[in-house]
Image 1 (cartoon, one colour):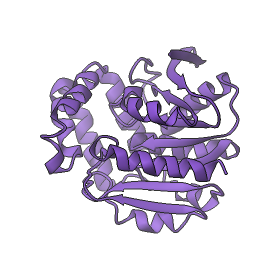
Image 2 (cartoon, one colour):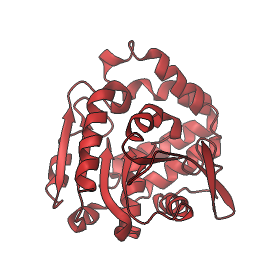
Image 3 (cartoon, helix red, strand yellow):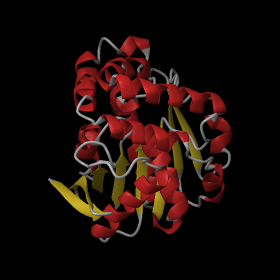
Length: 265
């Protein structure tokens, strides 16, 4: 069932399934809560699962002109306060991982565990910031063309044909996103700070799920980040790029279930 909570005079839409200890699932850039449909179905047999449309995506409207990771984290907190939930594990895919880290920095007492799913605690390099600026100009000129070309590069090459129909669904959903909201998120990611200090202060389980063929978040630099955590673990998914929730669904589901058990023991 789709519900909503108020944040800055805007409705933040989410689903809420299952009972028990709570897990929050946050989608990535130009995605929405629907990416977690199968994960929510399986996890909600054991836990309470909340999937949120972050500002500017899915059913949630945009807010202002830059969607900072901190603002998005505050929108997540608004949902969890609306549900009267005080402690929960958060799983964030890509940009959702950046939001999760911002949340952990702002609200550390609410975190039972953190899963960075194809994500990183480091800020954009100067080169990456320049690339995001270039992409922003492309989106402003032709957002549909940007979306059409965006998803294929996120998958391991051998998975593109097999997952063609699911990639088409991702594209169709992304094409509905307003141009300004895509730009807002790009600006927010470009300006996010390095949050490795969040990892050093974590006293809860931190799981990095990384794709061996991920061209967006290469796995090698994550090894040093895992060492910053008191309870850190890195799981390398051999046959995946940046979209493990589709490319290696069963393996990732198993890993998140194991992660959840550690968070709630």
